[in-house]
Length: 256
Ligand code: PGA
Image (cartoon, rainbow, N blue to C red; front, side, top):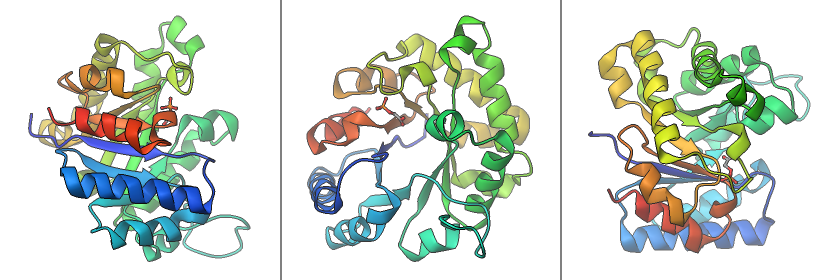
């Protein structure tokens, strides 16, 4: 299929400074030693990005540094926010945008998610745009419509030449942190339909080249079966990314 698997750890609001550095070091050492097929990134809290970035670079830099969020403005009076250029300054190469916890807990609207996507891609960074339905939406038969809407609204105004730096993460909200994983067949079905939306927006070649990660209770035990699906190109990992062993178990599942 030609798409390199991509496994990213989303540490969310976890770890402390020493723990973040130790986890990053363990992952970086394992990746340097094993040279897995998958591309690997870790996304620590903002406050530990600098320390984690230094730990990754000291171990060869084979693991990319990602951020969990960003603000869409470059600088100015936006108390508490962080811009794409600040992230770049720390060596960040990937930014997660539109994670369900930001959409549903922090109440970020589609329009802000779109502005963030454009800021990240416009700054030359890689963007992991998260989409996915809630349990109510799934039970109401709205899964495909929700995913299509979040992809289309997230990518509004994004020019084709920036899509090479885009990754979509399909994360059914009911599967995140619940231990309840989408079946490989359900994940494949959603991924295939998301790819069709990308094809509609950017053409079949760009859609075929864009990686679509699965996220939501992915663990070493279920990662291989999920990543074996033709349209599942890796994972965005929460809980299982907080231990180097379990995260590496998922990274190895990308040796497909
Ligand atoms: P989880 O989180 O692996 O803990 O379910 C995934 C995510 O929210 O990115």
